[in-house]
Length: 317
Image (tube, rainbow, N blue to C red):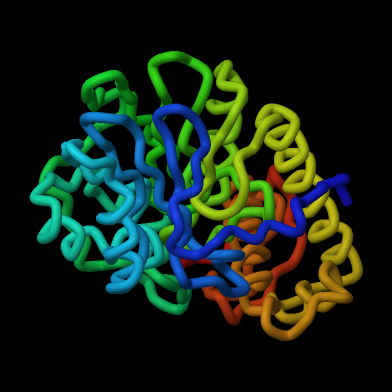
């Protein structure tokens, strides 16, 4: 496997503003867990006009902590949401009730045609943690700018983890708020049909082509060498793909069998998430005609190697 080094020992004070710069603080939500690490990180950018980035879960203590972190005499002019997972977006309306600021996000579920087809056909599963009721007051298209006194952010549509995922790039060119696309504590969960591995890899490459030297992720510490992390993540996904193809050389396998093969030492609490990541690879490999499902493509189906030059081998959906 690719050599990925993850951060350890992150222990933020929950609910306490953590200074990250002259105009930036983070407040960590009390929702630590296997999929959220030490908790969702809510960022407050600015000194007079404040942008709140990712209000986090609908947790009263966390909402209170965000409100308390707003500097005296300042106002919150925007509540920005990187993506509609409940640990990032569910607190938006409660925070809006306290601060009277508009909620901004992508606002479109953003599934590819392939993923829409799989979702409509049924049997693909997914939808873990999706905040299906989230609707922003203003939808941000790729390239949209959000401005306040002393700061300007550009919304970058970066689907993959979720179809509506946005990153927010600072106009000074040095920092980027990366949501759940790039983190230092773990790889990103890709769970079809709302997660899409092909889109995820394209989004990683898009960020790799940029010049920011620090990423502020949705969970964990700031990334001070984001380009190196993106390179490692791309290599990791390529190596995982190679593992799956190698396992299928021995014959057809279903997702649990592939998880047991490529994640032999993984503990039970994370096996379901690993299965979703494996499924994401299989959907991508099926689209590229490197594997084929035995029967209709579903989360519980069996997969085998196929020939890229033999369209007839591809099972109907």
